Length: 112
Image (tube, rainbow, N blue to C red; front, side, top):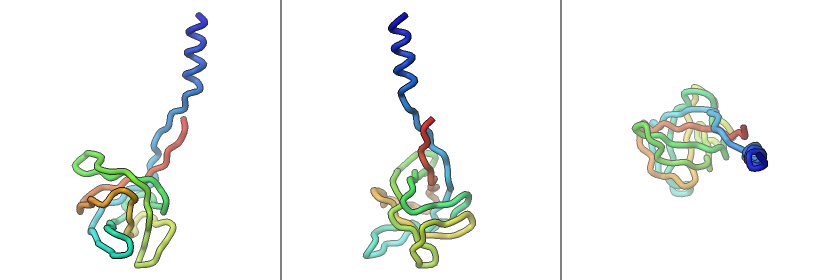
């Protein structure tokens, strides 16, 4: 009985996280910029993207990368966020293997 109580108490202390989608974009073009590296040009199909936000990259139904948006630009101007219906360009820390058609999910992690 004491072991069951300990297990229940321990389980209540363990925090789980879930991903909450903030936006979805589709890569339209890939660019190589000397000062930045390889960036993706994308259209934001829903929600929004924010600089510093977490993303996961999906290709053919598989996650091919994860990272953080390092730079975000709209019309060659650096911006902090881009909304649905806009085109933008961005670089993701730790990911450079972009392909046209990649789907990019911008998300946040919430504790449940």
